[in-house]
Amino acid sequence: MPINILMPALSPTMEKGNLAKWLKKEGDKVKAGDVLAEIETDKATMEYEAIEDGVLAKILVQEGTADVAVNEPIAVLAAEGEDLKAVVAPSASATKPAVPSEPRPAPSASPKTGRDEAPQRSQNPSSSSGRTASLSEPGAAPATNGHAGRIFASPLARRLAKAAGIDVVRIAGTGPHGRIVARDVEAAMPDGAALRAPVPQRPAPQPPVVAPAQPPADDNKIRALFEPGSYEIVPHDNMRKIIAQRLVLAKQTIPHFYLTISCTLDKLLSAREDINVTAPKGADGKPAWKLSVNDFVIKALALALIKVPQANVTWTETGMLKHKRADIGVAVAIPGGLITPVIRKAETKSLIAISAEMKDYAARARARKLKPEEYQGGSSAISNLGMYGIEEFAAVINPPHATILAVGAGIENAVVRDGKLAIATQMKVTLSTDHRAVDGALGAELIGAFKTYIESPTAMLV
Image (cartoon, one colour):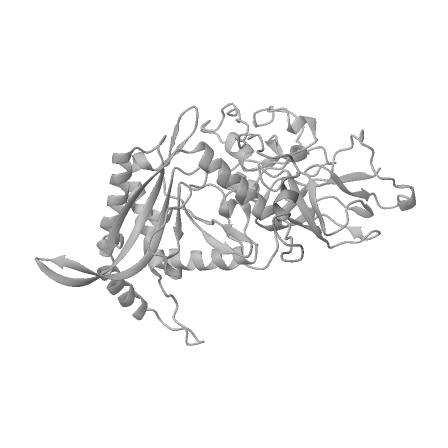
């Protein structure tokens, strides 16, 4: 019987995606693990991988189609031997479950593992009922996820289960179509730490609806102000739409305030030069590492957040999330917008490790090959425009963060030392803060701790 292949949800907030490219054509045989298509989200291109065998009977959504809704049928898979000519497009009332698939980033660079893949939406009633993952009842028949003896589990879930000594056959999956994901393994761990009822998810906040000052034909009225032919219309892509929505959300729902301080960089620049000089050269003659000032900034902010844990928080309506580690997002400019990959546990990593990780993230970000778990979350962020000569600016907080640090250029200034004029390289940084989570004195303590680390860089090496 034909099975519908649906547009997957590649992140918890995804509602639409672009079908960039089909890698199979109608009539092609499909095996579990084959990549069927490439799906574009607002910030990444993901591969859509099948986990059922069959024949691609009909393509319903052509490549290049934009804004395809999640769970909309995009193709039909038939079993081998079925009459492909008899396969028809699904009706609105079709209830056959979709072929579950494993979205993964296009293999342009070696991926970094961290968290389980983003959960997908599902039409399977058993996986959307909000049940708690648990071990199967003793003596019960092994679970098969409803797929004729095959157990569907994500690679991360299998690794976690193996490390914990748990047989995945005895775990009930809550992923799409009963798929076992990392949270199911954690819920089944013997210490019971994760055997808890799922926390009710609050709906994602939406920007307030503002009554338009003009009728819906607003755009035409604006265009009428300009001479025909003096401009061209460039439609907004998904990334620009999402950036606009999040900026409006941030400024309308987060009460910002700002703190600015100057940091003297002379010791940092000297330490950076000393560290870079010691870098061994590879066979190509290039040094093994080359630290940037931004690498020191990432490390300094991470250590400051650990030193001032009351500022390492996220505001929610029901309570404050106090983070136990410093996951630092770093804004990277890419064609058409920006993205913020996250350096996890930055306080525990060496400057050389941070530098290598950041270079990898930046390269893959510009190629739009980051995985969702590599740019989602984090406890604070950095936006550095110093390389463009910008001396001072204030950044907009990226929800759900409570802070973001805007970093300006290092400028040589005249300063007074011991009653005498001297020249020092100084860098202005501005901390944008969510006043609901971090008050003025606490924000001052955080940016003061950052300044201490920047001006005494050896403290970051201890």
